[in-house]
Length: 226
Image 1 (cartoon, rainbow, N blue to C red):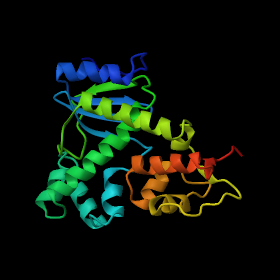
Image 2: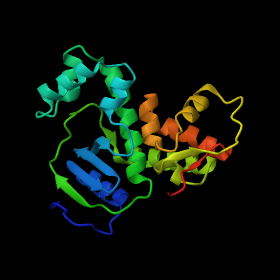
Image 3: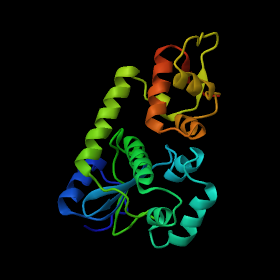
């Protein structure tokens, strides 16, 4: 398939289905992020709206920052950072796979949430992390739909996912579950959901669930424009 350099009317989900059927490899770019394919399977997704895998690993304490940057330096150009982390003993293969899948599905939710048009497709482009776990395109699309529907049922206002959030003045947050209370404590009128997830070293989707529940309880709202 030729390189795409301009916006098209083709939704990301449609192009991903086509590329999966062709067994294509490369990077599909949208306004919300990039989906990386290898042999028609999704191998990584990144989005500025979610913490990247390095943030998740280092902020959670699973990996020391020095170990992360050492792997980037040694194997980034060869697109084998994941393999370097495991081979060097910095991280167990199972822990890497679990974190990788969490980051992949979190980023895919944002890339596919509104199924916007594809900006371009770059054949043959690989992600610097390298192969960890390949996921069928159908699985990624289905999981993104499931997450979107779940969040819609909790609270139907998607602005919660994207904008800085404020506490509702005078609201009473008594008797909140521990995770929800920790999430509310990070709401400061500046942080977005992704920034709150990073601060908590928590998966973005789990944070979105708690924030939507807080919104449904009348405790959190999108920050009003200045």
